Length: 132
Image (cartoon, rainbow, N blue to C red; front, side, top):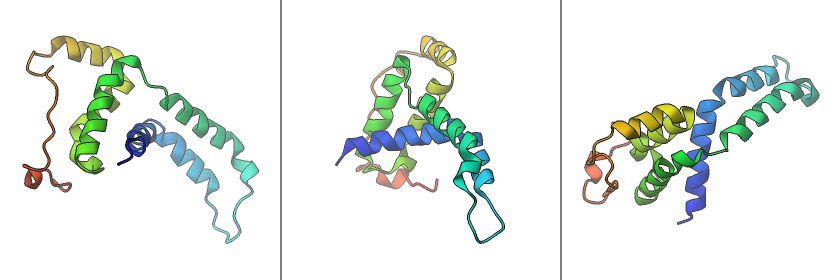
């Protein structure tokens, strides 16, 4: 398995979460009622805003390396199914959105919560349904 594709998937989940409004603005700019597409130059400024947002979203804070690795390992062990790793991916997104709040979360964590995560999707595959 190629873990690079998992990293791209994880970053794209966070980037879309962060840049959702810019994506909607760009798509609204491109919308037309005519069968002929709009001139791309008309949406140049919104496209630049969207690219700038994605560029900022690709920067990962060093504090968020541990939750990122947890998500990557979870996605790897679940054979690329990110639906099984909702809790871990949300923790990575929360870390990226507000590092101070995540630092406080780590400070208040118990020793049991700080232990390494175990992912066993083979023995418990019935409990990890993507629709639950």
